[in-house]
Image (cartoon, rainbow, N blue to C red; front, side, top):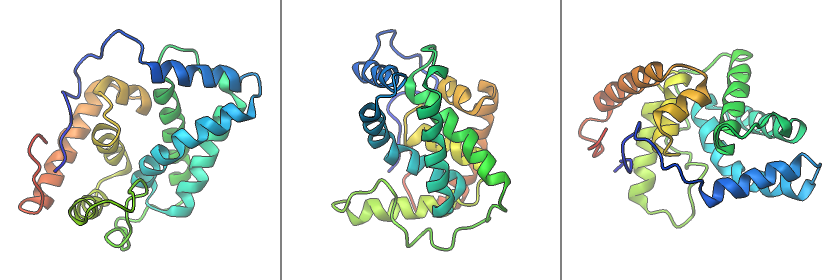
Length: 201
């Protein structure tokens, strides 16, 4: 079952999370050409961006290429992070722009015939069968959404981002995010009716 903790557009606490501070410090160190800091940030974001980009691009070779390109932007231009958003928002925005460029260079497949057989990039070996089955069904359904709609669903349910943060990542109005989410929910509910418990969607 997929459900989010809290509302998508619920305002976040004004307190700065320790993780956000740690990641901001890593960016500051990367700005001094600290390779160890970059390697640490790479380890943090590799699994998160792999899932995100997989849902947009649907092709493993493009995912790896886009992931490396996005993180190289972080390495080459850490000074572009101005602290007005979370580090994660900034990095996901970079990854999304890189993904759109990669997608524009290739014809996007409407369906991924291997989606049901391929485990989620972030899935651990101990994951239970029922969870794998849920992910496989959802992945197949999401393959029929546009990349823009998949990005909204992925950021909402797998990264727990709010509508305002998603709008910043995708560089679009909050209203557009809400419209895409409404369309995606309607589409997925129709496809998955009776197959998954989608309470809360």
